[in-house]
Length: 186
Image (cartoon, rainbow, N blue to C red; front, side, top):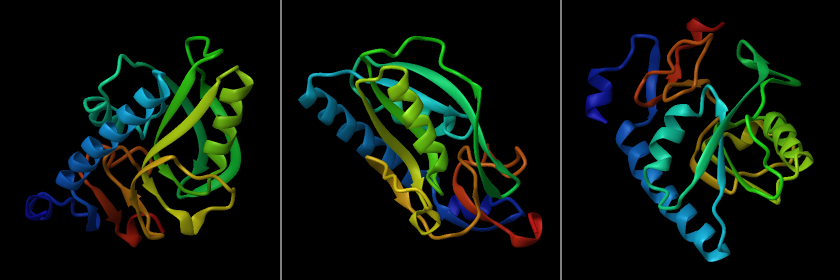
């Protein structure tokens, strides 16, 4: 954590989840996902929701000891700092998922709107099952009843950036999750 403080971006109020904590949790989640899918006798198709989940995906899959395949989707439901409630598919999967077991990788579960719509879409495309792994969960903002199957960290209702999460496409490359200073987005 001391290293993050030394390297903290001037627009970050505080580090909420350190790089070290993220790496440790990715290893734990990868092990659990491996065990769960082995016990089911299934191998998931890992679907990353672009762009925010990419750093999490890259770190997580190192610890999933299965012959996974992965694909990407791009969806949007935000304008600035607020979910607008209208989920738009910007880029769809490049393959059929009929009969597949899907593991959705997300950066954060916030209102739940995006994941609810994407999960529904996966089933409409013929997925046999859909599970969700999210780096962050912010249950205080939930407006749709949806729960991730695997969660890295439950966080308070603060505006976070880093490790894939952005504000106006900035801060995604921070190696930690930090709270953005209020004056940066108000």
